[in-house]
Amino acid sequence: MKSTKMMLAVLMTAMWCGDLAAQNFRREVMPEGSYSPVTNINRGSYPRVLKDGSVMFRVNAPQAQNVQIDLCGTKYDMTKGEGGAWTLTTKTQVPGFHYYSLVVDGVSVADPASQTFFGCSRWSSAIEIKEEGMADFEVQDVPHGEVRTVYYYSKVDESWRPLMVYTPAGYNEGKKDYPVVYIQHGGGEDHRGWMEQGRTAQIMDNLIAQGKAVPMIVVSSNSNVQNRNGGFGGGYSWQGMQTFRSEMIDNIIPFVEKTYRVKKDRKNRAMCGLSMGGGQSFYIGLRDPEVFANVGVFSTGMFGGIQGASNFDLEKEVPGMLTDTKTFNKQFDVFFVSCGEQDPRISYTRDIVKKMRDGGVEVKFNSYPGDHEWQVWRKSLHEFAQYLFK
Image 1 (cartoon, one colour):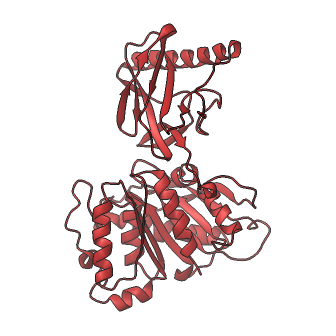
Image 2: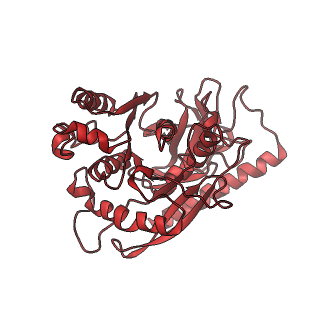
Image 3: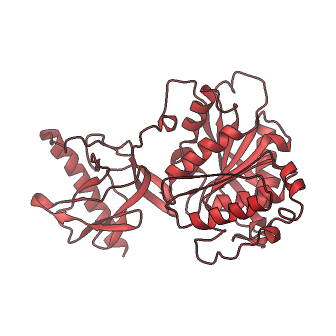
């Protein structure tokens, strides 16, 4: 098996280098109106996004017997042409960021033509489909903050663990303290997700420059943590959240408040996250109002839409939400829920938001075009950030 993977790696490297060499001698005419996404390594090569939003892939693999593209869980068969070049054009894709991989003779690998990102529990290729009107997700001519990777010691995991921290423009030169957002990734991703795939720095730079958001620090942690002393390690339940709750409250927040100039009261802390991170934010954020006064829940599956999620009891999971709603509402400055309109979780999310509102809970809600994907989560952060700390 190892020799097969090694041979495949050599083959993929050779065909990529060969493709580059060939391009040095000939300039290929690309489809009219197509563009090379920012996720490409070589901006003049494939994959290409066509005018209708479909994607054209081209892979040189003359010795392969079968080549497919696995794009967002949909597999497309490629067609072999002259010289061993395999091609295909997908159906129209929705705008945003999409993971994909090559499947060569049954082995799934990253595409050497694309940048790689940690997602789907592995290093994956990705393609970015442009969306009009989303300039806030791009680098603009505004003052830029800074993203740093730092390490703290976890007494839960008994190891040094990474954080990625966004500090706004002016932080290094100033002396003032800032509010903090603790932002959580989804399953199969880690602390890099929000800062790389999620474009947190670009979103915050642009919102702050426009005066739509107050300057704030954003901390992205790796919630894939294990308790070396045993105990609950995960799952959509209050008990299942205890390991990461301890990590967040006993390790991450104290480290951030010791290392950075931050405001150290609940009203200046927010917790939010996507999917798995949305579940963590729901439980930890809403059941620890002495720690957080602002909570954002993006595309969580705990309300329904995923296996094992059904009959979600709001009062059981957050005691007092429906029986002492007045107190609950006073505890939170912002409670925000969002979901993609094509996400299997959307109907369950709408139902639970309606139940909250019918019970008097003050909850903001929005949905955006898209499935369980990064464009929806970027828009969620973009909106949530504008409500905070005002």
